[in-house]
Amino acid sequence: MKNILIVLGIILGIAVFAAGTGLFKKNKPIEVEVKKEKQEIMDNKNLREIYFAGGCFWGTEHFFQQIRGVVGTEVGYANGNTQNPTYEEVVSHTTGFAETVKVKYDPEQIDLKLLIDLYFKTIDPTSIDQQGNDRGNQYRTGIYFTDKNDETVVKGEVQKLAKNYSKPIVVETIPLKNFYKAEDYHQDYLDKNPGGYCHIEPGLFEMAKKANPLPKATSYQKQDKKVLKEKLTAEQYNVTQENGTERAFQNEYWDETREGIYVDITTGEPLFVSTDKFQSGCGWPSFSKPITKGLIDEKMDRTHGMTRVEVRSKTGDAHLGHVFNDGPEDKGGLRYCINSASLKFIPKAEMESKGYGKYLPLLDKK
Image 1 (spheres, rainbow, N blue to C red):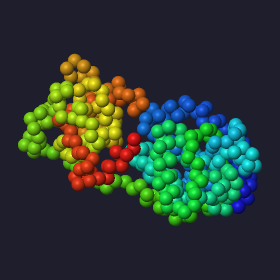
Image 2 (tube, helix red, strand yellow; image 1 turned 120 degrees about the vertical axis):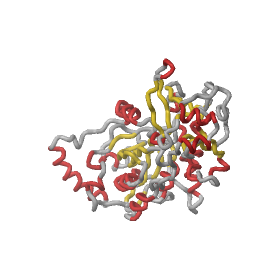
Image 3 (cartoon, rainbow, N blue to C red; image 1 turned 135 degrees about the vertical axis):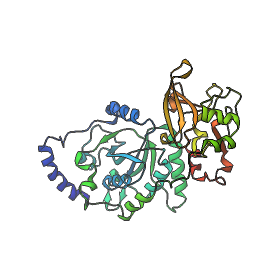
Image 4 (spheres, one colour; image 1 turned 180 degrees about the vertical axis):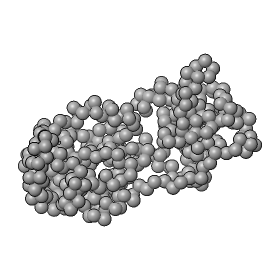
């Protein structure tokens, strides 16, 4: 059925070709797009990517586009044995490529585990080279990763989901060998052709829209200084309200290694998690990043004869510390040097009972 529609798509594509889009030009492999990728990383260092093969890539792409936290998709051909394949070459079953969707996502908004769980709802993971009405090795299922750290998560989640099936799971869980962008008429196909063929049940698209809802609004509020004067210790008040700095190596959390969450001492709002904490040797708690950038404000600080970037909590407007660019490169290169006196640590075992249960998944991301 899909092949019949492809013919119509090609005919319609001629008009696009006439307009100069280069419809039948072969596409460059992923390695050639390094400059574009670097720019995207500069725009958001935390964006991640994962590749899903789930049958016809028209429906798989449209499905992932509905999920909050997915910031970009691209359909193409993955893990084949030739270069620059065309659609006609892929469907000839001689190239070994699988129709695949490149998914870019923000891990601060959605976890890879949830993406994998949702993907499983769109496929029959026990079916070999067939999804819906489509048959052929280009329709095999697979999750392909470019980051070695994702391998454990991908394989672990697939093994966990496999317990729900009586037949063996045939979803490939291997590194991405190559990926070539598909022809333009394949991109965003169901957006351009709402009535087009799709092997995924329409109701799943609505489910995807609701699968990762925005968190409910919190009641965190900035406190009056008179209230804080009574609530906080002298040092906590001095640090958060008077931009003070506590002594290095003589503060509560500089050597704290337990799992948990760090919240604003003035409002209780979560700011950092233990999985982003590292030993920097500076004598203060150091983090590679906050839970989300929206939780903090960064301001130029030229006090004490230095030029630094101050970090303040956005809701509580409490002075937290400073951010420097000498952090671990593999964690983004930043070091958020934070005063213990501006934080309250909630151990993992107490997070649920103290109202921070929804943040527990953040402790499982590494």
